[in-house]
Image 1: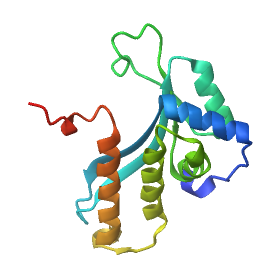
Image 2: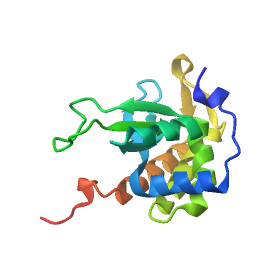
Image 3: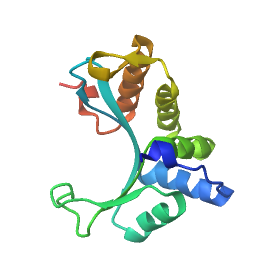
Amino acid sequence: MSDWNKYVRKQYTDLQIGYIAGIMDSDGCFFIGNFSRSKTTDNKFYQTVLTVANTEESMIDRLVKDYGGLKGKYTPKQTPKNSRRPVYKWTATGKRLEHLCEIMLNNLSAKKNQCEIMIKMRETYKRRSFEKGHQGAMVLDKETMDVRKKCFDELRALHCRNYLNNKST
């Protein structure tokens, strides 16, 4: 069963909401990925993820304990060359991601725009504006795909590591 079907919204204290917002503002990442395209419908597949990476394993453990999601560890290839300690990561997806974005939005400062874009992106997953295409694959309407592409582009433009936006030559 996917996260989408089993997630139950939890009530968080103001302190917990402030904590997750502070962590996301400093060490967090709002990520929309585009990895492939459907061969049957030609629609792009987008993935939405909240992540926090840190060498302090206790922080990641607390995020998992308090907010759910998954804990992982960077592989040697993913770990920065100058890192002297292992890097751990926390990820949240699906309805958990939606809920966390909604509750922390007003407590964010540096990444408030990114959170708003993520909320807009996740709204497209609630729509039931698709039809069955070739071999039963979902065909999303053009409007939904346009919103997803726009959210992907907007969020990507806000990320500081986006070398594609570097216009200097």
